[in-house]
Image (cartoon, rainbow, N blue to C red):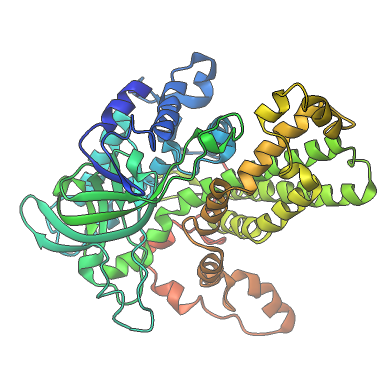
Length: 513
């Protein structure tokens, strides 16, 4: 079905335990600290009913059911581009790509499970005969049929890394009992985003050395399950929608989730018990959200470039050669970021389930490029704005009949109206010079994997070692013997490698159109 905003808001009033800062929230849909973002998410669902955008936002499945494009499974390059254009539409429609965890991306993370369910069951330890692969299929269908929102929680608590037993003895979520109904879990998931606004918490693990089998849990848990407490940070929104046109629209709220002896039924369990599986496969789950992240980053780079152009034209500096060179750097940043999106799509491959997946390395290197340069580009933009990014009148000051003539003269530029500069300044301030914007910047830097971890994980791939294809040409030129593939890569399970598609593996000769 296509869920309505009203149905979504009603689903949030389910007895869940939510704290935002110092205040406990009775109803996420109506409380002042959460209602704006809940309403924003409701608008997401209502937008899918708009016939004017039906072809972009929805599709008709094989059974003739019209569904949200967030459930669309792309089986060709053209399908993947269509899915990307859907994500771009959502990003640009909702707070200028400043909502990194709208439902379309929350649910995208489920794709790896449904694409290849069997390894999650066969690699499990302690769930024999429970039909975990069928659990994956059944829940995915249930989530799709009801347009549910599933917020991921994969990050475990920070531990004392000076101790080799730190992770094993940390308060990370773990199984304390198994019975016929399901598993009893106790502990903490350290950070997730949008959890207060979700229907289910999507549980997983980023492998850490020393992880024990009882800490390896993949599945979902109802957000209102008995014993679950969602503890959100303080909200960073500003209530004045005129002065703060972006940051006043809502805060998706990052949170820690506490599990106090929570029963998770077997039907919600996808995998338990195997640290080796957790070591091999889970990063592949996040491949889809990382591809989505690069799309978002390309959109954010587009906005940044556009703002730089607008403010330079308004200030009359756009024709100064030194300014043009600085604008060119910002525009080049946008062009290069988007080029990584296009290249990843063009060099895609087919997964075990027949999905067309963008090239993992290309979109990861695109994310690296963005993260390495985003802060520098923000500094360039703010510097190009000068005082206009911060020193501009409030609406009440502008409307004052005695002060307005002065402000009009103060903000008169070579292009547009004086008030245009105020409007540009408000957006630049919200995005880059407020607590709301600072949180967004931090999210981009730590989303999924921070830059240094991303670089480390990427360089552990066999194709970038001395035995990989990049070094093969140099070996031939130098006259060195060809080496066998990296031992670690050889030992990687085939089901995990099939989600990577190293450049000489599993890739169509020509990307399907």
